[in-house]
Length: 183
Image (cartoon, helix red, strand yellow):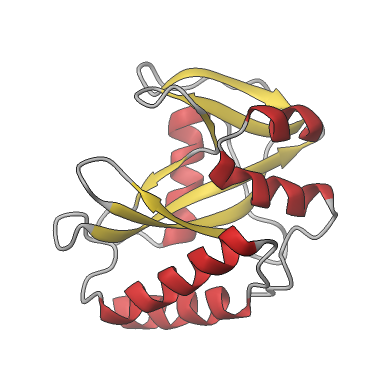
């Protein structure tokens, strides 16, 4: 896929996503506005605003969160998109690196679950695409990737998660994992 076709697909998915709360509605609008003006949206060196990918990982034990190594807060696994990588593939890779779990997309294919626009390090803004993934097993992150990784039941995850993640977890708890978006 070309960058322009990936951007067009992402634009359609983000537009179709029904915001679960005011924060997500504002993030969705910021995401769409920024995506329109970015010539290289996945290149972290091209612009201080860029698209990132993360995963809302679910399994029988609940959802996986990791304590971010620099920020010290509980987040979903995710990060920057490597050159030539598709965002939904980056989400799978980040899960493997940060949790050690082998995650997969639902049988229907990559499912955009949530979006969030938030400040990142070095005065960057991350436009985060959050994909729904499935995994099982015990987390075993690569050395140096995370302070801690564990499965949380949804009530506990809602209590400990970063505020930017709460909307995604509420959507899971409500039984509406795709937010009305069927990519």
